[in-house]
Length: 342
Image (cartoon, rainbow, N blue to C red; front, top):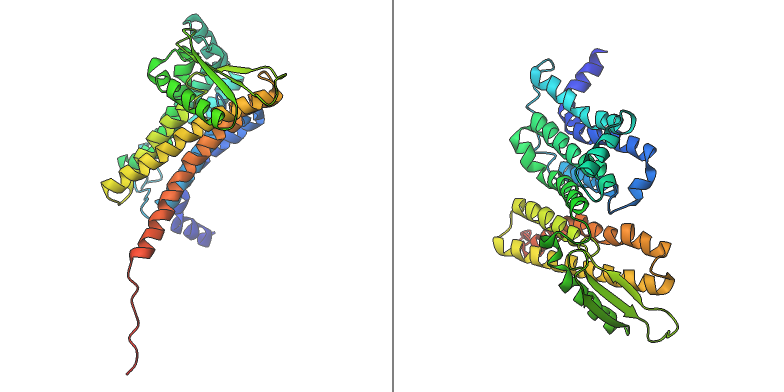
């Protein structure tokens, strides 16, 4: 027993570092058992929570040696008790949402407040509550330095909740600051479709926040009806562009590289993200022309596979930056030559 206590004490710092993941793994697994289908949706779903765990794990791996849970020095203290209580908030919130009527109360409040997508407000609130709980856990465990270390997953989770809330309150592209980039994205998607041999036209009407309507037809199949979709900012992937901006800026801020290199990495990553968003629209139209605009295939790509392409790129890009920097240093670091014997 004494040896076990010594081992626990010896590795206590390593165990404490993993507690933020434990605090969210348990409620996420519970949510999966309660509503597995929600984890199959990128837009207005919980797939982003899995990416949050990935980003959190990445930050732990990259900063493992520098992280010290020195704020929890005493086993019995007000801070330790507050930390333990905060750790339970995500799990308690899941219980309150599904068993104590919290989701129904949020939906009723949103309906009475005139929110268009009131049924989606519980999910938006869930993201925001998880963000607040995560920040509190990190602050109690690592202090303000820990908040800086885990700023990327925290901002990622918060931004998803904010974006969902904005779309709930201002649907169909009514939020002008996000919708302003959509016409350019729609025009780029139309250009790609034209290069592929399709015929396109764009109608910039005034329905629901000036949503552009893109129509594509296949000249090689005259009997097939044209495919038309209205493009709002969620459909154009503006949310992925915003998430990329936050994640990239926070990540590059911590990189020990020149500001010119940071600008170059950001411009390259933003350009790729923007092109991916345009190609996502292209694929939606190609799917619509192949299976029909109201087909299940279109819904699957629109709500899951399309956003998955963008987010997969966003979470992979920091690894690309790290790998490219490592390769750069290897190429430009002169090798030491061993002295030859006389």
